[in-house]
Length: 403
Image 1 (cartoon, helix red, strand yellow):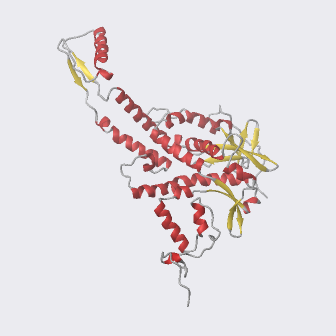
Image 2 (cartoon, rainbow, N blue to C red; image 1 turned 90 degrees about the vertical axis):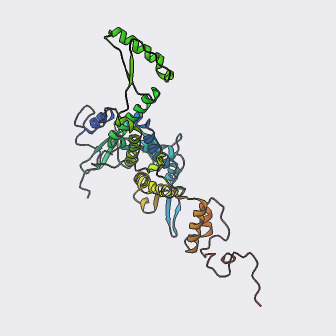
Image 3 (cartoon, rainbow, N blue to C red; image 1 turned 135 degrees about the horizontal axis):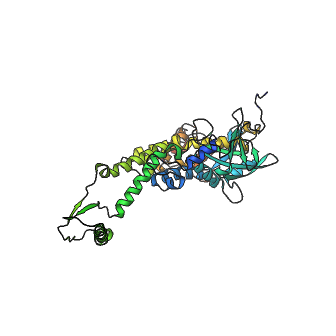
């Protein structure tokens, strides 16, 4: 007997105005400033090129990779297009959005804010469509067992109706999204972007000091400053300055911090890469990128960055779209072959090794290259080792008949 009550009644519900509630903490987090004093929100963070590139790469990768429902068979597994969940994970999630688009919307919420949600509509116990749920429309509450329940409007739903994609969490309840975990790093990146913009807005010229012999009035100082900016500021910079009344102009030199502005922006780029686990070469920082390490970092992107998100999606799909009985026979998986595709020569070498060891048939190779199957292409015999095959020597002449 399950020791906890499985009803959706929650013993304690805290409102948004309760400063002890998780909802209050999330609301405060939306408007919290970083240590730099810059307010970091989803909009401001996505205006930072490095953050935009990293988040967009993760989100679009998950949106473009195909997902399929598979059925176990005697020979392994085969796609199960007749299963009700197949169409909504592979083709269209609902009447107006593709399956990939819904995954993008949910994933961007999870990456930036820590949690993303989608609702699974069911009829007769079978999944019919999936729709994205805005974060503000969902309230998550927990039973004494730790099982989550999801409140949408006035209705509670169990975990088998809500696709909940969560970033790594400290307490298992709220995901640690990029805006929270990387608030200071992103705030610094925003500040550096603003500093660079201001610097170039002034034609990359430092400020200076105008000085005159004797005492001048406030009105005269204002008039001289306005006149100087109109004559030598912006597009007029670089001309010859004419000063009277023993006036002197002394430019203000860059400080050591300003002179290392470029290095600071490069470091900020690395911080975003660390936070998202996206290899820095994939954020177009190619100073130390080579053909060898770039290819390896692409593999690292799949293994260390993308696979945890894909696993979160397959677990959520399995929980919501497959019944307990179906989970013994069916599975939902992403096809990542396209991310592992190398150049033609490397692929051909890999296929040859798989053929030689008897792991691939000719038709297996042709399917991966989007080519039609051959009538005699299902044999596992290797053309490189099987006696009597022409591929052994590469000679196209017909063998001589035995005497």
